[in-house]
Image (cartoon, rainbow, N blue to C red; front, top):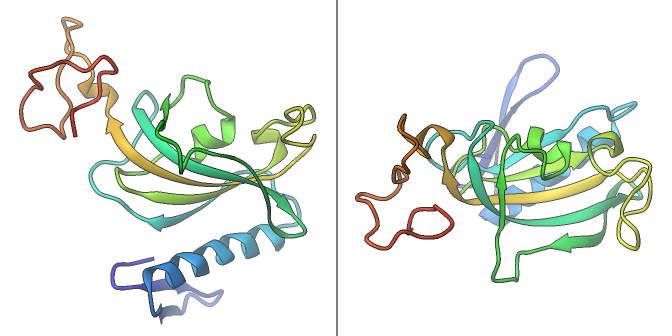
Length: 189
């Protein structure tokens, strides 16, 4: 999906196509459907499917970087989006995570690599990369494929988190060190 509501793609013959949409929402919805179609046409989903909805700005995140994320998670049911099982979109708290720390499911660790601040991505995660055969009692049935829409709201790059002396260095996004150090280490923006 590109600015001004259009998408570009290549077909099986490497022919380039562009589609213009009436709104950003229509372009984003189309991109989600493309990702769902990719999932449904795979004989067996054995890795995370990623579809960027908005690219964001700045440097792509890597392992070790800290993020604050807004997300919604659905069960993948009847070849499409099923019931929402988790979301923090309408809550005050964003999810804080450090990529590569193993605190979130493997599909998130993999699917969020390369995202940028302000970016939104659609992820379809097979059971082996999610909660597997155990599921989550009362929320995620065993062997469930999951779908997430994730948005990176804040980023703190690992290589900017600490200097060689171990002292904290301000994040790239703040023009000057914040006069009041925030307890979470994120820049004041």
